[in-house]
Length: 131
Ligand SMILES: [Zn+2]
Image 1 (cartoon, rainbow, N blue to C red):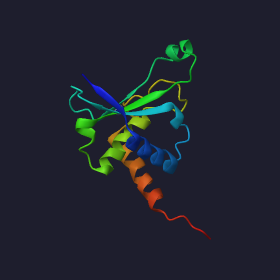
Image 2 (cartoon, rainbow, N blue to C red):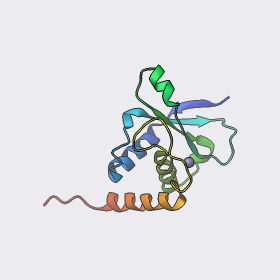
Image 3 (cartoon, rainbow, N blue to C red):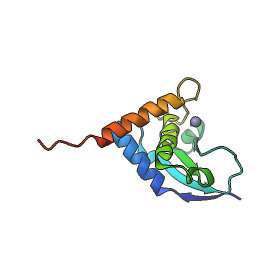
């Protein structure tokens, strides 16, 4: 039996990443963050969930996403790796925030995640000028 709990720590990291990288298409009001325990899936640190667009039409709601981190794997990672996992999952959300997913193939690569992560560090470390 998988147990789910809200993951405010993951949400906070995502908030920092989105603000720093100015990923303005990502509406945090419509992304939920969960931590699961007891998942049988091996090798998975996190995943993103959505619903087909027809569901959002039928439920008369805007598209929403859920990013789930798998406690057994995610929580063992260094914070740098955690941030990269979060960046990876956020990259699955298309610019149109349609409810669909950006596929891995050519779009979400280790290298692209690394580049975004390095930009994130660079911007985050740049002191804000008061001049
Ligand atoms: Zn992925």
